[in-house]
Length: 378
Image 1 (tube, rainbow, N blue to C red):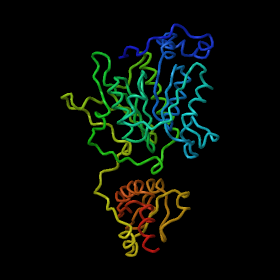
Image 2 (image 1 turned 60 degrees about the vertical axis):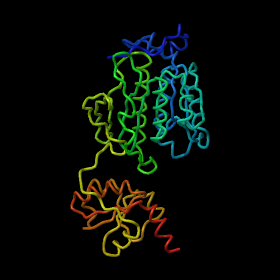
Image 3 (image 1 turned 90 degrees about the vertical axis):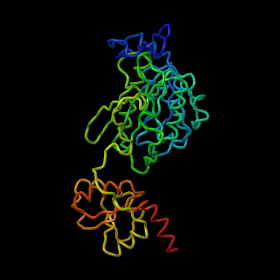
């Protein structure tokens, strides 16, 4: 059911803003009153990257009055595939500067407060104070936990999402929801003692278009909370599998409410669970070299642009997608799978073992090989 609106509306919209947001004003159950609530709202967006970019775009276009954008990074060329707020001309500039420019282009009445700082447990509550809603688009558990702790302290709802490879999650956490509504926190989805080692986007990649999809979901949840329109995702986690075109919903209840809570949504790096299989042997560079000399095939599953920078002599090159699509193409009874750091190799090895191939993984990937083996020969 809808929650009470978080924000009292401004007295009136300007004629220009009423014209600009005309398609909101005719929405059944939304109308001018909801638009005036958006104009009065203050949203803090933590992270101006893959998720923060579409969130800022959508919230500015929606007519949110104040958007505080917190990010300490500079724009890099590799960001542009998914961080749609930035342009080629922004490379080398502060990410928060893009937010100021893009919001002004979309909504002259929206004020962006850029904060070029690294959010930490020490400053999170201060940076987020005054926001009606916080949106977390960060990419490390340390920062996510700092944001969540500050939101719990401040009692404001936290709209939360994560994207990795072809998979994503989105939900809402709130330690002080309306009366009669159960509070749900980040720790209910990811307990403090859960694994925190998650591969970065640079290691395993991320589908750029999926960032836009999830960022749009986060912006929609924010609008719903501000205006009191619709049913927020509090107590539910959306789990998206872009490859299969599936969106599933997982119920989420407090871990300490005395009930048998549903299993939490899978972690970002395991949103597509690997088939059950025996543990894959992890070989050191020296062990992999010995196995290769004994007849095992080194199978490099990196992409061509990566292998152009160098490969282990004697390797067979076959990108991960090709291995997953047809593991029989390997054509060898025993292989040692190689990628940059080991994550893709693990996925390939599970698939190969399912096809009857004796597969192991070069632990640490090419990075470990370059560090250990080359050092021996220098």
